[in-house]
Image (tube, rainbow, N blue to C red; front, side):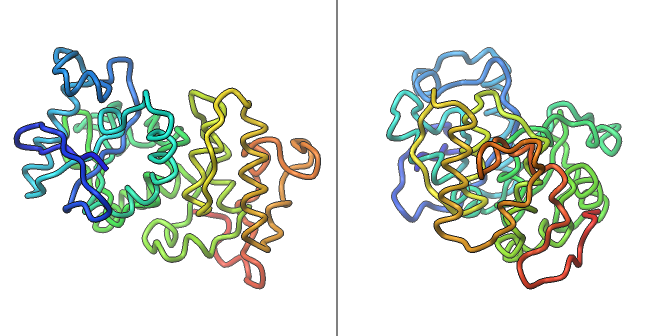
Length: 277
C-alpha cells in the first residue's frame, strides 16, 4: 500500500501494517494526476494536483501524517496492482483513521441544499466509500468541513434521504453484513460508473467477495460473475428478489433490477426499517 507523506508529498510503500492514514473519497475530474505523473512531478498546475495539495493540507491540520488517494497511489499501468487494489478497496477505506468525502460541487455557503444534488451520491465507487469508513466527514468545494456521519444529525438525514440507506447502516458498520443481498443491491441501483464492468467491481467489498478484473467482458457478464460469487458464499435467497423486467436468465442483468428491492429484509427478520428513510 502506497501512502503520501502529507508534509513532503513523498510516496512510501508499506506492508500489511501501514501507519494511521487519512483517505480521500471524491468524484474524478478531467485533470487527475496518475502515480507516474505524481512521482515525476508532472501536471502540477491542474485541478487534480491542487486537490492532492488541499487534501494533504487538510490532513495535516488533523495531525495525521499519511494520506491515500486512489488517483496517484495506485500504479494503474500494472494490471496485477490494479486488481489487488480494487479487491482491497473496502479494506483500505475501513482501515483508514478517517475518510474525507470531498464534494466539489457543494459550496460552503449553501452546503445543505447543494448536498442533495451532489454527483458524489450518484457514483458507483462512492457507495463503498460511504459505507466502509469508520469515520466519514464531508467537505465542501473550498474544503470547509460540513460535518461527519458520527456527529451531525443533519448530515445523516441528508445522506439517508439522498441514498435511501437507512441510518442504522450508516452509523453501525457491523449491521451492513446483516442487510439482505437485495437491500444492498438496491443501494447501488441508481448509481453509475464510467466503465460498465465497474458497476460490478465496485460492489465486491460490500458483499465481501473477490473477483478477477476482466475489462472488456461487458457489464452484464461482470455482474453475473458477482452474483455467482455471492451465491457461493451465502444462502440469502433475496438475490433473486429483483424486477423480472430486468431478468437475464436466472440472475439479474444489472443492479438497476434491484431498484425496488430496498424493503426486502434479511431472511428470518421483519422489515423493521423500510421504507428506508
